[in-house]
Image (cartoon, rainbow, N blue to C red):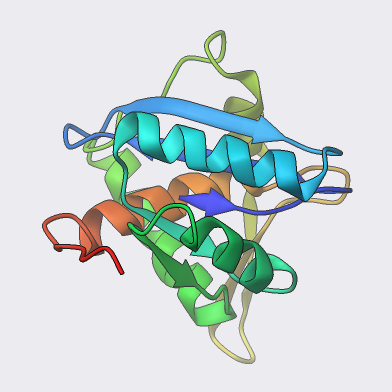
Length: 162
């Protein structure tokens, strides 16, 4: 799962294997997009990974840049409903111990984000809104949620190099 950011947010790439283990997390910010794209492609190639890439905002342009170098990726548009779906799936995967999380010592940013990630329930709309509180990030959580969604939807799909 690839969550893109550069200035205030981080670009995070999370690799999850077929056993539900997090194999690798790349996290970067305040670098130029050329270097970030190269790093993402390198990680994807190293793990021969299939990936979902966030395409909101600048993401569509970065997705196209990655796609010219690596084909086993698909776009993911984050909306309130798609975010609800992947976060709910992540919650189930963690609660049912299908997904193994790294310890705090192995990757503190993910641990922190998971601990502070929260929700609000609107009695009016009867909807849940997931978010990181002010002053915190949700880039690792979103990348992980997209990785889990990718594992669920893209594993087993064949890709044709074009």
